[in-house]
Length: 192
Image 1 (cartoon, rainbow, N blue to C red):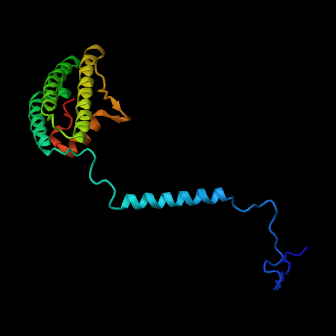
Image 2 (image 1 turned 45 degrees about the vertical axis):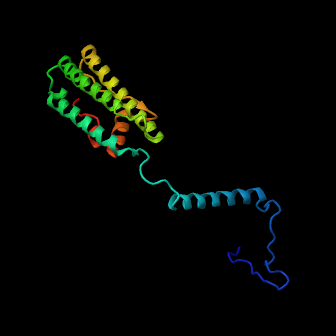
Image 3 (image 1 turned 135 degrees about the vertical axis):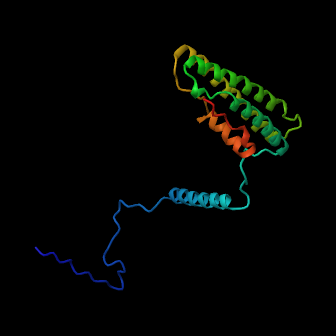
């Protein structure tokens, strides 16, 4: 048995050298070619949009009313100073004592949230109304988590603080993400 390949000869009348296409290999369908063309064009259009001048610029959480951001900063700074003046809850000698410290800080946060809400102008833009409503709602949910934590410290002893999730994200993370864009003093307190 020989391992040599058979000689192939090409003639002018047979440019494929005797090769014939098997009958079971159909050419690509028209629908398949159209689908591939649509996918390629959509990909090109996406990148033109994403890299072009039409894309939205900036962070969608950025407030139109920077005056509100400045007022919010002042409100949050004052609240954080009050909370920082309290003993840190982690220094408490017992879960019951920690519960009292958390509850004291919660009173300050409750006032802060109400003050932030009152300062929202009735003439606020539609964009600011939507993002501020979400931010204030997140703060209220975070405060509710803290209040439940204070109750659980008394009932269950030393337990971990649990933060609610909204749309798959931690409420604390959502608050901080918004605050870091608009008013850095309004990030969550680290007193627990």
